[in-house]
Length: 185
Image 1: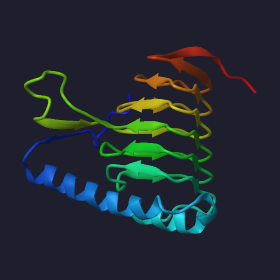
Image 2: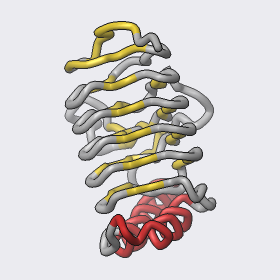
Image 3: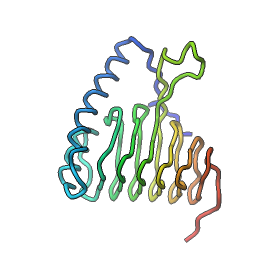
Image 4: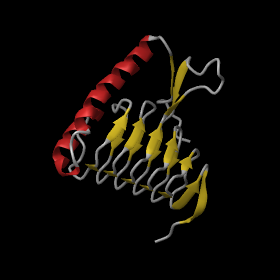
């Protein structure tokens, strides 16, 4: 699992939760501008996405709006990355996307969650990083849950829910996602 020093527990009604909320507001303002653009506005989309994540993305980066995120500052994107329309990234725990990754429409990549116990559910947010390694394809409607690494060259089948690490060179699918087969060139 992709647990590292970026794993966060943020209690409610604290300076940390106030900072998190301020970052959400900043991200919503930027994504509102980004979501008024079209695929033909690739340069403007790259400029706004760069502002959102706080670092310049490569000229090979493509994103089809609309796009949604809770922060943006904890997203890292490699070269030749394609993100299709209507994706949602909750990046509080950290989201690393390597080179040559393709992300289909309606994909949700969610690093944060809440406690299961009803009495604690609103008390704090737990956030674990997600790592998407090189040359991964995440198909339409898939969901990736915090703490997961998707290994190099792997494919996540449409509508899958990934709750555990995906080893390199595999096709996974289902809910929860399980290995379907190995991928060989």
